[in-house]
Image (tube, rainbow, N blue to C red; front, side, top):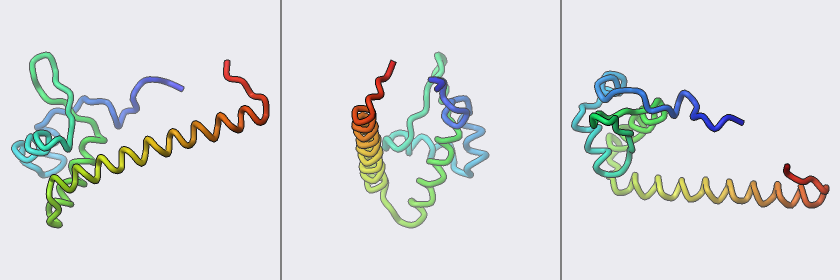
Length: 108
């Protein structure tokens, strides 16, 4: 399996394009970054770069804000979702290890 990021996760999109695609203002996008909801990469010159996954996340955040959800609540939900995903990944790894042990499969 390739260690390279999928096209959805590559941070190559400028804030201007993100603004056009999402309908959000640059100020809103920066605000979500300040609230630790979105994490763009920075170029050596300091420009922000976003991925398609970031754009999807921004659209989700904007929809929740429109529904009256506070940024703090969104952040807490994101933390909870991340923990659940990590637990699921660990559980899968443990089950795979048990299956490998049961059937005598060894990883190279």
